[in-house]
Image (cartoon, rainbow, N blue to C red; front, side, top):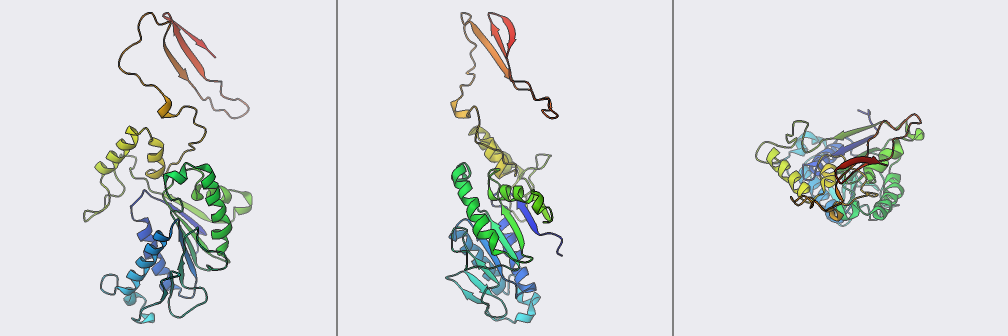
Length: 301
C-alpha cells in the first residue's frame, strides 16, 4: 500500500521468518511480475533454500495453488536458472523477477531491484556477532553492495535474528535516524520468544512452533552458561553491546557457601553504581564501594 519504505522484522530462530519471506516474495511476483526483486542471506545454502521454496510454492498446484490465484500466467513452469538462482514470471527479463544471492556473492552489476530487496539473517552466527571487526566488514558489504542494488521506489525488508547492536539491522536503523534520512518511512516489528507474561509467542497449532516450556528451558540454558546476553539478543530481540564489559563472567569467583574466617581483615564488600539521571550537566557520581574492616562498615570512593 506504499505506506512504508523499509520494514524491520525480528523474531527468534526457527520461528518461520524465512518461510514468511517465501510466501511474501511469491505473492509479490504474482502481483507485479515486471518488477525485479532481490533476496540475500549470509550463505549460498540459505539462498538456495529460499529459491527452492519459491519454486515449490509456484509449481505445487496441489498444496499451494499459486496458479489459481495468479491464473493469468497459466500452469506452465516459470523460467528459471538454477545456477544463478533466478526466477522469471511471465517472460524472460534481463533482471529476473527474483534473484537469490548471498551477501558475499556477486551483487554489483549482476543484480537489480525495482521491487523488493529482502535481507534475511545476514549474520552467520555467534562467532561473527561477537567479532566487531567482522561486523564492520559485513556492514560495509551490505551498505556498499546490497543497499545500492535498489533504485527508485525499491522497498527494503530487513528480517532476521538480532545478534548485537552492531549487526546490519542495528546499523541500518542508526543510518535512518540521521536527519538526511528522516523522509524514509520505516517500521520496526520485534516479536520476542516470551511475552510480558512469560508465555511463548510462537506456540503454533498442529504441534509446531515452540511452547512456553521450551522457551523457558532455553533461557535456563543460557543462564547456566552465564550468557543471558545471547538469550536477550537472539530470542527477545534486545541486543546489548558486549564489548567493553569490565567483568567477564568467566573471570569472576563465586560464593561457595562458606563465609571467610574471622582472622580475615576484609570480610565483606559491596559495590554500587547508582545512576541519578546523568543528563542536564549533572553526571552520575562515581561507583561507591562499601568495605567492612573488622566489623566497621565505611564507604569510600
